[in-house]
Image 1 (cartoon, rainbow, N blue to C red):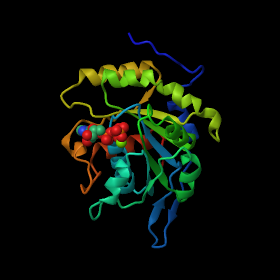
Image 2 (image 1 turned 90 degrees about the vertical axis):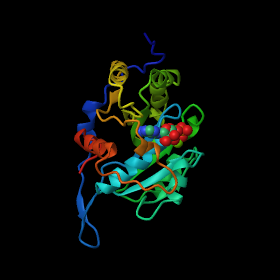
Image 3 (image 1 turned 180 degrees about the vertical axis):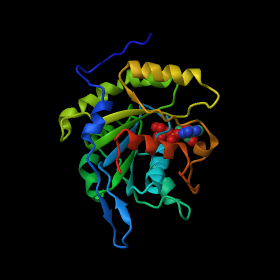
Image 4 (image 1 turned 180 degrees about the horizontal axis):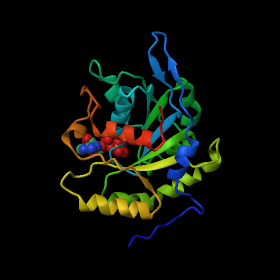
Length: 254
Ligand SMILES: Nc1ncnc2c1ncn2[C@@H]1O[C@H](COP(=O)(O)OP(=O)(O)OP(=O)(O)O)[C@@H](O)[C@H]1O
Ligand SMILES: [Mg+2]
C-alpha cells in the first residue's frame, strides 16, 4: 500500500467546480465571416515528474484543438526545446500555429504577452524534478494542468515522491485567483494489450483524489513516431477524443 506523503488540507475534488467556473464562449466572426471559437481559457500546461510523454501530448493536443476550431499557440517551456524543434522542422500543412520558446522562470510574465486574446496556449514543460522553477512559473498562469502519467506504478510513485499535489498547491498564493489550477491526470503510453494494470493505476489515482481523464492515450507507433518533419493529423485520434472529453467536462467550451 503506497503512503501519500503530503496531502493539502481541504483540497477539494475539482471535477464539480469545472462546470461552475467555465466561462461561456462567444462565437465571433473573423474578417472572412467564418465563425471563430473564442475559448474560455488561456494556458493548458502538460506536466509530469519525469519523461512520460509530455511533448508528444502537447504536440498532438495542439493539433487536435486547432483542427476542432480552437485558435492555439504552443509554448516550449522545456530547455530541451523538443516541441520547438518539431515546430521548426514542420512539414507543409502541419503545425499551422506559432510555437514560442519560453523555458524561463519568468514564464508567467513573458508568455501571456505572446498569447493573442482568445487563444489557448498549450505548454510543454520539462520534467518537474529538474525544472521546478519553470514548472512553478507555468502553473502560476495555467488554467488547466494535464498531468501526464504513463500508466505504470513507477510513474505514480514518482508523482508521490515529488510530491505532485504539494507542488501544485505551493503555487496557489502566487496565482492571481489564489486557487489551484484545474488538474487532470491523462494516462498515456498505455499498453494496448494491458487492461488490468491501467485500471489499477486509475483506481489508485482516483483514491488519491486525482481527477483522471476517461480518455487514455495508448502506446502506439503513430504517437511514438512524433518527430521533426513528421506531419500530425489529429482528427479521429485519441487526442480528438480528449478534446471532446475536455468539452464535455467543461474544461474548454464552445
Ligand atoms: N502514446 C505513445 N505511444 C508510444 N510512444 C510514446 C507515446 N508518447 C510518447 N512516446 C514516446 O515516449 C518517449 C517520451 O515521450 P516525450 O518525449 O513526449 O516525453 P516527455 O515527457 O516530453 O519527456 P521529457 O520529460 O524528457 O521532455 C518518446 O520516445 C516518445 O516517442
Ligand atoms: Mg519533453
